[in-house]
Image (tube, rainbow, N blue to C red; front, side, top):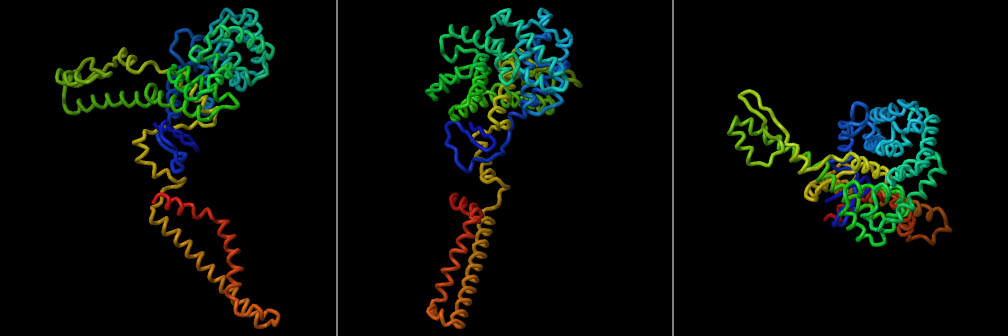
Length: 444
C-alpha cells in the first residue's frame, strides 16, 4: 500500500523513487474525516451517542481538536458551546459544584481541549483560567480521583499552558508512582499514559522493527495515541514514524473509512440495479438472499419498497466508527505538519504515476525533447556568433596595433578562449532548464 504525503512518499515494502515524490494524489483521508466529524456533530455541539451529556465530553474534546486543526471554525465554535454551556450551568464554579460535573469523561475532555477553550472568544480567558486552577486544587485534594487516565489528560492538555504548574508537577509525581506497577511492555501502557509521558514510548524504539511489529498488534485507538507520542518526542527516527503512520492509514482505510463506504455503496447500487430490471416480491427477495447484504427489504409492493439495515451485521462486519481514533489521527498529522494525507493502492498508482513525475501538468515527451533541442540550438548559435564577434575584434586590434601583432594567426583560438568561460558561466546559471531533458534520458 502506498502512503503519499505532501512533499514526501512513504511506502510499505516498496522502495521510493524520486519520480514518485509528488504532492498531489487522490482519495484524501483527512477530508473524509472532516466530513464524518461534521455530519456526526450533535445539536448541542457535542459528539457521541451517550445519553448523559457529560459522558460525551471526552469524544467531543478530541473532535474539537481535530476540527481546530482542519480549520472548520463554525463547527469548532458550536463544539466549544457544548463545554461553555455546561460550565455556565454551575456559574464557572466547577470545584464548588464538583458533584454535578464529576464524570471522568467530561473532566478528561475539559482538560484535553483546554488550549482551544482558553483561546476562544466565546469564553472569558481569565475566568476560565481561574476555573481550571480551582478544579486542579479540588482534584489534588481528592488524590486525582486515583485515575491515571484523568491525570494523563491533565498533563497532556495543559502541557503548553502556564496553568497550575505546581499542580502539574504533583500530578506527574502521582502518575510516575502509579506506573511503577506496570509490567513495562508496550501493550501494557494505556493510550492516555503514552500521551502524558511520551518518553516511555521511546524506550521501546531501540529495535525499530520489533517496535513496529508490536505496535501492529495494538488497537486502533492505542496505536494512534502512540503515533502522537512519537511526534511529541524531539528526537525520533522518522522511518519509525513513517511506518507506523502507514499502518494506521491502512487500518482506517479498511475498518473506518474507504473500504466500508465502498462496500455499503456497492450493496445499495446492487439493490437498485435489481429494482430497475423490474424484479419485485419473492423474485427480488430470492435474488437478494444470494448476497451477504447489509441492506435488505422490509416490505415491498408494486409501488413502494421499504429497506432496512441489518444493524447487527453492520457492526459485526465493520465495528463502531471511532471518533476518538479518527480525530487523534488528524492531531498526529498536524503535529508533524502533514495534515493532507492520501492513499492509493499499487495498481491504482501505477496507472497514474507518470502524471506525477514532475510538479507540472505532464507534457508529451516529443514536445519536451523538441523544446530542449531548440534551446540547445539557440545557445549554440549565440555561442558561435559571440566567437565570431571576439575573433573579428581581435583581428581588428592586431591590424591597428603593432604591439598585438604577436597574436596574428591566433585570432580564432583566443576568441574561443574568451567565449567559452563566459558561456560556461551563463550555462551553469541556467542549468535548471535541462532537468527535464535529464529526466527524459533517465526514463529512456
